[in-house]
Amino acid sequence: MSSSVEFHDRMLSLGLARVSEAAALASAKLIGRGDEKAADQAAVDAMRTQLNRLDIKGVVVIGEGERDEAPMLYIGEEVGSGSGPAVDIALDPLEGTTLTAKDMPNALAVIAMGPRGSMLHAPDVYMDKLAIGPGFRQGVVTLDMSPSERVSALASAKGCSTEDITVCVLERDRHDEMLDELRGTGAAIRLITDGDVAGVMHCAEPEKTGIDMYMGSGGAPEGVLAAAALKCMGGQMFGKLLFRNDDEKDRASKAGITNFDRVYTRDDMVTEDVIFAATGVTDGSLVPGIRREVGYLTAETILMRSKTGSVRRMTYRNPTS
Image 1 (tube, helix red, strand yellow):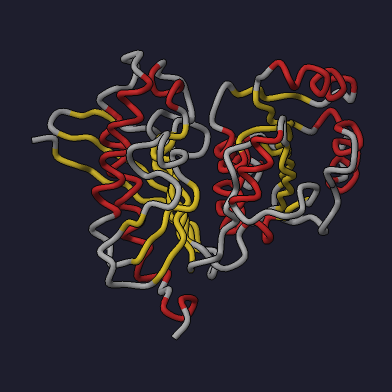
Image 2 (spheres, rainbow, N blue to C red):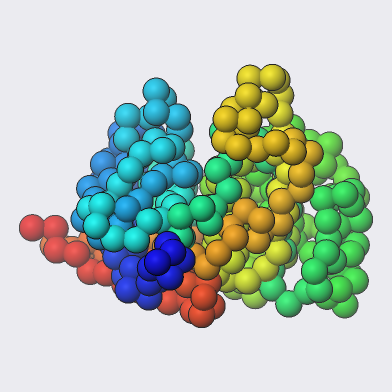
């Protein structure tokens, strides 16, 4: 029996929500404490413990880094009880370590799971990313277009002015030229300091978040996680790996990548149906952060299945004693 047949996404989805909730709750005590490493480690430890309680034969394909760089949840690490379906796992126990340490918005614990071989094994390099929400014809915007052309094309598809388009961009010096061009279109720009998985997810719910499009370069592993989210929520995403040196190309080769110029679509990065869970750590536009009450911590999780297109919001009230 193939892993895709054995992958019962509905049965595994609640377990996946528990995994992201555990990571978020573990990092909650370090919100605003100024210690990024401690917050990340707390989330990693909790997520790993909870993953190992699931009846899966899991392999981390998007994780905290290479084995010699990440003591836990490294790429290639095997997780789960070993008695269930063979699955790929993409995760970021704390997407936004700086956001957590500084008590800034949109820190999340995120994880995606699919049948073995369903996710791109993205090396730890940069990826040029472009994403929009659902409801548009395929290819209405492309990576081949200039930033201003993308804004104009999306505005035309929406039947609005370019001034009515809002673009989310990671605030980095490398994006200065792109930002200048975007501002020339009259579009609004939502700059984020970290957390580009959340940035891409914002595009799927523009009526709630106010974000129409995401563009710019960021980590390739995070690109795969974002593609998994959009596979569930709807929307288009494109990504192209960016290499700064031969060492990064070697990493890509070891991950099985042979075409260094390929533009990946959402469905190239995530080829089969997946489940995705994201729990808020700090308050954000997608989901509230951990709330402290007397004797309780309350977490909210978005749990999604691409097979059905279902998006559930779950509240978990956890006693602290």
